[in-house]
Image 1 (tube, rainbow, N blue to C red):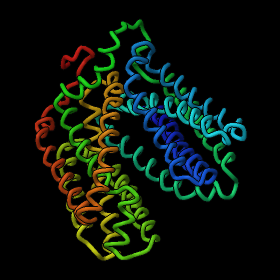
Image 2 (image 1 turned 30 degrees about the vertical axis):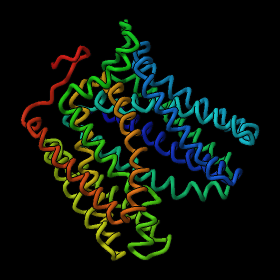
Image 3 (image 1 turned 90 degrees about the vertical axis):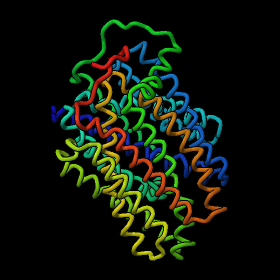
Image 4 (image 1 turned 180 degrees about the vertical axis):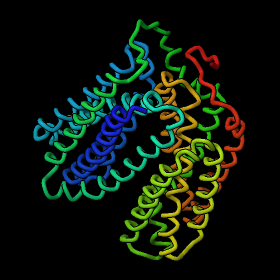
Length: 411
C-alpha cells in the first residue's frame, strides 16, 4: 500500500466527513431558528434524501460518459464551488427559503453523485490483504470526527454565527478536493481510455444486476437491509423514550447514551486496526461473531433497567458493531472488481435508504403500540438473523473471492 496515496485519501475522506457534519448542523439550526417551524427545518433532510435518491439512479449514466478520476474530481469541485457560493451569498440567499432549498438540492445532488465514487477508491489504492486495516482506520476517524462535529458545531454556531461556521465547511471541502487531486493523479489503473456507451436502461440496471447475481453481494446486501431495519432503533426519538420510560432518567442521559456508544465505536475501530491481520483471514467468521455479540448486547440493553449497565452495554456494542461492519465492508469490496463498485454502491445506497426511511415509521409505530422494550427485542432478532446469514457465505472464506468483470463473468 502506498502510504502517501492513502494519507491523501484519508485527508479527503476526513475533510468530507467533518464538512458534512458542520454543514448539516449549521443549515438545520439556521432553518429552525429563523422559521421556528419544525416542518421547515425538516425540509433539509427531506431534500437531501430526495437528491441522493435521484443521484443514485443517474450516477451510472455519468459513469458511462466520463472516466472515474475525472468524474470524481469534477463532482467534488462542483460541490466545493456550490458551498463556496452559499457562503459568499448567504446573507442574500438565506432569507428566502426557496433559494436556500435550491442550493441545498444542488449541493445534495453533487454529494449524492460523488459519495459512491469516493467510497470505491479504497480497493483501488489498497492491496486486498490490507483492506481491513484501511477500512478500520477510516472508520475510527469518521466516528471521532462525528462526535467532535456534532458536539462542537452547535457551540460554534452560537458563538460566531451561521455564515462563519459555513466558511469552515467550505475550507474542509476545498482541502478534500486538493487531496483527491493528488490521489487521482497517482491512482493506478484509471479507466481514462475510449469508452463504449451502453444503453441508458442497461447502465442504470447494471449495479442492481450485480447485487442480485453475485452471491456474496446479494447476501451481504440482504444482511445490510436487515441491519438497516435494526439500526433505526437507535434514532434519537427512540433512544429518548428508552431513557425516560425504561431508565427513568432525564434528557442528560440521552447524551450519555450517545456518547458511550460513540466511545465504544472508537474503541472498536482501534481494536479492529490492532487485529486487522486476523480479521482479514477470517472475514466471514468475524462478521458472524460481531453480529451475534451485537444482537445479544442489544437484547440485554432492551431488557435492562439500570442506567450504568446501559452505558456499559453501549460501550460494549461499539467493538461488536465495528467488527461486523469492517468485515462486511471488506467482504463487499473483495467480491467485485473496483471499476464496478460505484454503480453497485449507488444501487445499494438507494435500497438501504429506502429501507431505513420505511423502518423509522414502523419502529415508531411499534414503540407506541407494543412498548419501547419490544423495539429492542425486534432489533436484536433482526441482527441475529443477519448473523445467521453469515454462515450462508462461509464457503467464500475457504477460497479466494472471485472478481467479476464488466460482462458479468467471473475472473
